[in-house]
Image (tube, rainbow, N blue to C red; front, side, top):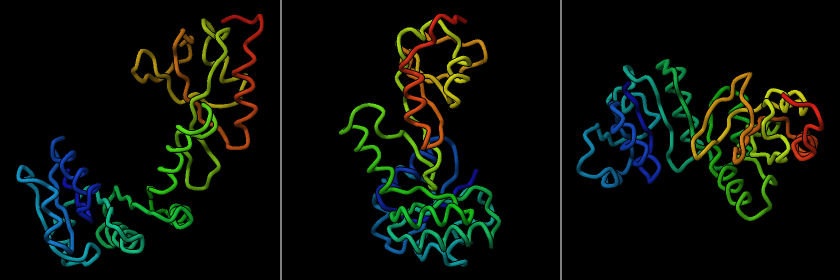
Length: 222
């Protein structure tokens, strides 16, 4: 796939190098030509100097053949404009914009522009390390209604089907981490000692879900 990246800061440069290593062709757009130094001499993609939402600049970067566009410049407005031009003018299927202002990120997400809210994500990650386990989610959608969190299960759930735990809590088990590796549980998957359970749930249900996980299954076995 050909991918166009708007912005050659630390995120843009890292993203470009990673995508190229994975076999994609990459073009990076930045109005400051000195920013391309972050790409290093091994980067074989295009370096295009110009404004990332300018149509001629995007054409030079190969936007008409691109399957994806990432707007990761330092300006929220520029990122949103670039994402909209890529999608609405050039029909790029996969588009994402980095947004610093979490309130704007929520609005743009509702308008159909996939966003990565940098400030909210960073704050959530810091809180997870400062507060007790389970106090902050691993991920929260821009509207704040759905959360992904690691929820501790009482040891008495070991040996029981995860489907039973899911039914009892009303939440959805997204995946497990078992022996350091993520896995998707099936209908017959049982909880093993040491498993980390990652749960999708509505924000208002967090307390109830944690309570169900902590209480245990009683006498009902899988």
